[in-house]
Length: 363
Image (cartoon, rainbow, N blue to C red; front, top):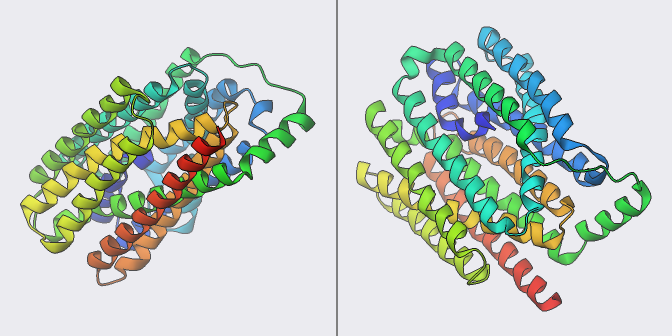
């Protein structure tokens, strides 16, 4: 989902090169997340009936075409937001196809760790070059680049494992709804949604926050790259250790690192604290995320909890982008954004840890 991974660069380019306000650029990301969330929410209740591999191939073709179209019509109007919504819907099919494929393997927690590693690697390199060469790319170059990433993903779909659809709709739907409405799954799904709400709220304007304290494009690019690459050690911990120490200990450690990074920048807004904050968040977030996904996969191997969790995560992301646009207002009040994001993150951590404890008691 390159549109989300490169969110801060997209916001900056739309503001600087396509006459978007900072609020409207945030809404462009929010609409894409809304489309993604709606798709996942619908899919989660009958995921067993779908051939996600074939569906992902078709929808990525549409996403590829729409990104090219966006390169010619990017402007702050409602029709552009609707197109971003559809792109969110189409790319999400491929995203959940990958998630459910990983969940089908025995050591799925390591698979999710590798998946997060690739996300951070692609995001870090993408943000580095997009921010550094934003003046050369412009809005048209941005969306053509996003189209290229969708085309690359399209060429890789055939490598996913084949899963036979289960046509026993009634029994499948009943069992999946039973899972989704259990206390363990409910807390994990909602917690994941709140977790992503906090992350996207900050991530949407993180490039603008750097600009607000007079960090130049070259330095911003360097910080984005380094902080994303530091997510790799976080995901490698999950790949290497798996569930050797359970889920709670690595999640608590990752959460503590993230909270430290958030609070540090709130107290002092300098180049150094901005860089340290970004690095701590990159490492901590990459450590926590695969363990949350592993917990959802462990709740239900068929993928319904994973699909619903990613649905609410995307809903949280959409709400986070919308909340960020609302909080900064016309005066670019980034302090309020950071404070609210930190509070939301702590609430999310409580939901997820309680769910893990309940699952352990249930087993």
